Amino acid sequence: MSAIAPREPLSRNVRVVSLVSFLQDTASELLYPVLPFFVTGVLGASPAVLGLIEGLADGTASVVKAASGRLADLRHRRPLVATGYGLSALGKVLLALATAWPAVLGSRFTDRVGKGMRGPPRDAIIADETTPQNRGRAFGFHRAADTAGAVVGPLIGLLVYDLVGQRFRPLFWIAVIPAVLSVALVFAVRERPHPHARQERAWSLHGLPNRFWRVLAIVGLFGLVNFPDTLLLLRAKDLGFDFAGVVALYVLYNLTYAAGSYPAGRLSDRWSRSVVVAAGLAAFAVAYLGFGLTSTSAWAWVLFPLYGCYTALTDGVIRAWIADLVPAHSRGTALGVQAAVSGFGLLVAGVWAGLAWGGTGRVPFLISGSLVAGLALLLFALGPSLTSPPP
Image 1 (spheres, helix red, strand yellow):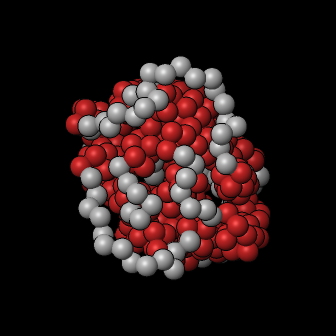
Image 2 (cartoon, rainbow, N blue to C red; image 1 turned 120 degrees about the horizontal axis):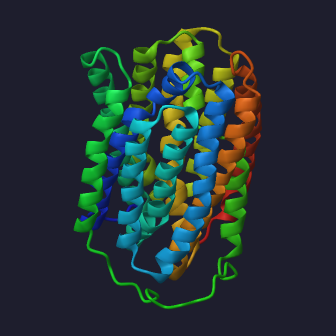
Image 3 (cartoon, rainbow, N blue to C red; image 1 turned 180 degrees about the vertical axis):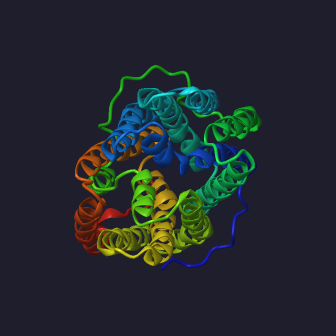
C-alpha cells in the first residue's frame, strides 16, 4: 500500500466530461432495458438475433475505438468527442423509427460507432487532467456520474411507460432529449494542447511497453466470455420478471455500480490496480455462475447488485491502469486499443452466447462464470508483474 497523499481536487474538465456522460447515459440506459422486450416481443426476433445485434454493434464499433484512440494522440480531442456523442444521438432517432430488427441493428450500430469514436479521446482528456495519485479517483468519479445516468434513465423510462399506456416507442423519442443536451455540453470542455496534435505520424504500436500487452491479453481473454448485458436482462425475463421488474433489477445493478465506482477508483490509487480488477473478476464469476444455476427469481435481487460490484471494480480502474502503463503521448492509442479488444470480445461473446442460449440461457452463464473464475485466480497470481511506475 502506498502512503496516503493529500487529495488533489478534480479538474473542471473531469467534472464537465462526467456531466456529459451522465446525460448521454441517461438517454442510452432509458432504452437499454426496453431492448429485450422490444426486439423479442414487439418485433418477434429470437434471443440469438438480440445477441447478434448487440455483439455486432459493439464489435464493429471496436474498430472505431482503435482508430479514434490513435487520432486522439494526433488531433484535437474535443471534436472527436463531440462527433461521437452526435452519432449516438442520431442512433436514438433511428431506433425511434425502427419497425424491424435490421433497423434496430442499424440504430445500435450508429450509436455504438458514436460510443467508439468518443470513448478513447474522452478518456485521454481525463488522463491528461490527472496524476497517478488521483487518476483512479478521477476515472471512478466519471464512471459514477456516467452510471448515475443509468439509474435515472430507466426510472424515467418506467414512469413514461406507465404514463403512455405501456407503449415502448414514445420512450425512444424521450431519450433523444438528454442525448442532444450531452452533445451541446461537450463544447464546454477546455481541451489542453498536446504536443503531437496536428503532427502526421505513421500508425505504430511498437512504442507501447510489454506490460501493456500483458494486461491487454488478460482483458482480451475476459472479453471473449463477457457477453452483452441485454442477455442478463433476458435471463431475468426468463426467470419470470415483467418489464417493471427487469427495470427495477437494472436500476439496482446501476445503483451498486455508481455507488462503488468512486471508492474502487480511490482504492486503486492506494493499492495495486491489478488486485482491484482481480476482485472484480471474482465478483463477475460468482454472479454469472449464480445466473446459470438459479431457477428462482428471488436470487436475481442478489445477483444483479453483485454484478454491479464487478463493474464498479473494473470499468474505471482498467482505464486508469492502462493510462499508467504507457507514455503520455500514447494514452489515446493505448486506451483505444484496449477498448477495441474489449469490443471485439463482446462481439464474439454476444454471438456465441445467443446461439447457445437454448430455452433459458443457463449454459452460457455457467461456461463464462467458470472460465472467469480461473482468470481471476491468474490475475491475483500475476498482478505484481503487471504493474509498473508511470512512464
